[in-house]
Each structure stands twice: as C-alpha cells, then as structure tokens.
Image (cartoon, rainbow, N blue to C red):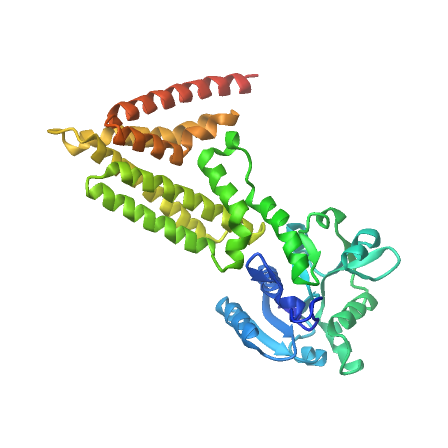
Length: 404
C-alpha cells in the first residue's frame, strides 16, 4: 500500500497568510493539489502533519474519504510509524510544493526514489540543497520500513527534513528531473500568496491552450480566449467548470423553448451562446486540471451537451423553415444534411482552416441571421453547398498530400 505524508506546518511568507499548504492557486489550495497527486499515484492513506484538525482539514478529509482513501492528521512525526507498515511505500511532499508537472508524476509512479533538480536551478527557486550538485524537489517515495527510524530522533524534529535524510541514508536512489520544468512553473515552491499570483497567469494560459483561429475554429478559440482572460479570477472566486457547463445546459433548454414558441432566430442566438459557454467551460476544465487526466463525468456531460445542441439546431432550423403543407420529415431533411456535413467535413481536412467548417457558433449565427432576415432555407442550402465543396476539396488535397 502507498501512504502519502503532506506537511502543513510551515507559515507563509507574509504575516497573517497562514500556512503555505493553504495558499490558493487557481481555485485550489496547495494542499488540495498535493492530495490530487497522491490519489493519482494510488495512495490509499493520506496523512497530514499539522498542528490541529481545523475546518480546512475537515473539508480535505471529506474529499479524500469520498474517493475511498483514509485520512489522518498527526501533530508529531513519530506518530507516522503507527500508520505505515514496513511493506508499504511512503510518498512525502514538502510544505509549499506546487505539484503540476506530469513528468514528475510519471517519475513518482515508477517507484521509490528521491527526486532532485540541479543545485544551480533548484536552490534559487527555494528548493533544499542535499549535496554539492543537487537540490531536493520536495517529493520522494521511500520504503515504509525506514519510517521506524523517526523514533530514534527527538520528538520535535522536522518530520519532512528527517525523512529526507533517512531516505538518503537508507540508499533510496536519487532520480534527477529535468530543470526545464522549473522556469515555466509546472513544479514550484510557493512561499506566499504573492508567489502564486505571479505564477498563475502564465501557467493557466499554457494549459488552456488558446491556439490559433485557423486550427481550432472561431468558437473554440473564443471560448479558450475567454477562459484564459478570466479563468484564474473565476476559479479563485469558486466558479468551477461544471457550473459553467450547467449554464450552457440552461441556455440549450432556453433555445429549445424559444423554438417551441416559434422564435427560432432567437433560439439560434442562444444556441451559439451555449456553445461559447460550453467551449469556455472545457477550456477552464483543462486549466483547472493542469494536465492531469480528464474527468470522466465532466467529459460525458460535455459530450451530452454537444450532442443535444446539434439536435436542437436541427429542430430550430426545421421550425424556422416553416414551409406550410410540408411534412416534418421533409423539413428535417435540410438541417440533418447540414449537421451531418458539419460532423463529416472537418475530419477530411489536412489544412489549417478546416476546423472552421465544424464551427457550431459560426454556423448558428449564420442561420440566426438567415432566420431573422426571412431567408433561412436559402442560407441553409448555400451552407450545404459550401460544405460539400470544402469536403470535395479537402478529399482531393488529402489524396495528393498522401500519394506516394
């Protein structure tokens, strides 16, 4: 079994800021992000070295226990020996370490080791020197049998520093990490809230991946841009990606109601807004996860919203066509062909601007304009012709590019 030890004793740099572990970074405390890493590495028990069990720790306890893991708070390092068996592995994370680098998680997943940076890069960034050439990254995995050596030390010893020395003396191998993860803040030592504020914007933009309109399409680009612009503030105010996705769902329901009330033009505008909010929620989720694996529940909800929005678009266009004495199957034919091409054509493209053919926001706005001007059917038919032409062009270009 793997056990995680998180230290929550060190004070932050500024008076009144509390402990380093509770510095907020993009909506989550350092302690919460360390717990995320511990659970991702398969730790079945999380032990916090803290002065007392306060409200923040109780909240963390509920989150840990909701995953099926056990949660403990100890005030003295010696108490750890009663929670770690000799056959266990102990993950130790230092106070203030912000664990966002996938490379470090992959290295820790491989097994026991003391993870290090070069002294030249690590020490100026606040990491502890362990020898002439190396600085400790603030993370290690050691065999549980070595934990008993804490009983040989004074009761008030520094638990994390002592375990680091015990691991090095116990010949736990050093595993060097690339110094390249330090300058961009994917693995950092935070000493104050000011450190977090300086690091948040650049870090968040990297994970949101705004990209370029020509490769992502207008809708995805605009959603990512909005998340990159306001995402850190939203997360720090407690706005989660799931809340935004719920807002997108409400917009979809409103668009459907407007269609039912014979106002398809306004419904299509709301549909475009729902897509924008959904894309922003997806980008915000990427930023919040910081490169960790996708959340299955959020991914399924996002897919459900996107499928629902396409079905609602078909319904709104069918209502907007409004040809009298025409059966519903015939009125559904045009929007079904249109949405089918929107799904198909971008997959045929090897060109930079191919994503624009699948841009739902642009599609909904064009159809809304056609509805409000009373020319929805000709607009939809023209869009079908344009998409067919793009599909043929992309197929021809693709075959030429891959021909030997």
